[in-house]
Image (tube, rainbow, N blue to C red):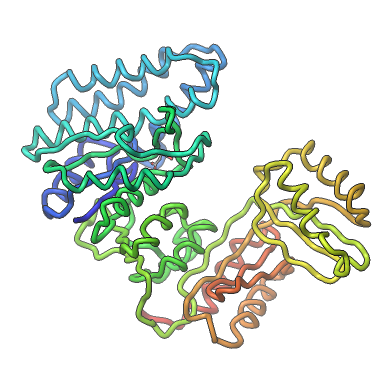
Amino acid sequence: MIVCKFGGTSVASAEQIKKVASIVKANPERKIIAVSAPGKRSSDDIKVTDLLIDLANTALSGGDVETKIETVVKRYEAITEELGLDKTMSNIIANDLRERVSSNLSNRELFIDNIKASGEDNNAKLIAAYFNAAGMPAKYMSPKDGLIVNDLPERTFALPEAYENLRKLSEVEEIIVFPGFFGYTKAGILRTFDRGGSDITGSILASAVNADLYENFTDVDCVFSANPKVVNCPVEIKEITYREMRELSYAGFSVFHDEALMPVYKQGIPVNIKNTNNPSAPGTRIVPERTATGRPVTGISTDSGFSILYVSKYLMNREVGFGRRLLQIIEDENISYEHTPSGLDDISVIMRSNQLTSEIEDRIVKRVKEELSAENVYFRHDFSMIVIVGEGMRNNTGLAARAATAISQTGANIEMINQGSSEVSLVFGVRSQFETQILKALYNEFFSTITV
Ligand code: ASP
């Protein structure tokens, strides 16, 4: 059995949904389909999820929601009409959205999650109706029937019982069309995953039914070894391990959500990233182990938006519990950190800047100075992480030196180097202004002589 996920651009219009139907029809193994909300039809279009977030915020601030509801409803109407479905479906969608908008505003997060999730929920109903009309027996399935999640708004996680509950889907005769992006708590409260979270739903479903394959349909032929917007015609990745993909999607490879790897990884289910607009292209396979290609580096990713908390104190290395107490202060602000490179008398804590405000920074600096008697404590901003990834990097000497030389030739200073103990990744912290130049330089260093 194959579980498929179709992303936003794959289900953005009637034309795209027809392609989805023919892909599903082409292989009877494709039995469970997770779908996104309609995405962008062109580069200047707006995703339905973004329209819905705007609608929710307008409702919460007491603004005029009518035109915003209309805009969303019209998107679905255009699709249903072009697919030749009767008015019933667009009426169901319009009523559903209005009902959600008129629900209780007192719990802000619940309200936003509930409106946001309607994008996928209504699209799944619509697609199931179209499959049936096209002679493909299909069934819309609500996450209420088993996708149990924890109580975190906007970034929920599936609970172990979700997998148990969803196992029964493998017995359903019809093609199941399952909305991506959300689940329900045990108390029946709707919670959404992180943005791009339909990948996570597909992965949970694949794991629950122990699928032979999880096909993730998007709008590119494959995963590239570097951002094709920066590097001209980067090498296409045909096969990549879960670990490599995890490292690359952590820092900027947005093709596949990094949280989507865990469920399939645990079961060893291979993932195939494929293109809805070119389904015969083999795509990129994400597998537990891959055959060696002879090249040490598989991909290079970059991500901006990092801040560094710098802390120094003479004889820090002799002070038992210093690191723990420092990280406790960060935890008390509910901030997750990414790296903690350290020297004898200093330590830096690297975190995503979007978790910080000037008040939070002031509180952290004050507490670290007072409670840890640190000498120098300050934040620095506008850093990027450059991540070089490859299973072949293990036992390959001289790689860090090659990377550092390539970076130095751009004139950038390396502010931090971190090699994970798995040795499949090497992370460099640099000033964001150098990010693009560095990516090009590193790509040249590790890929320019390779022909695939
Ligand atoms: N529609 C949601 C988003 O735009 C989830 C997804 O498409 O995966 O983030």
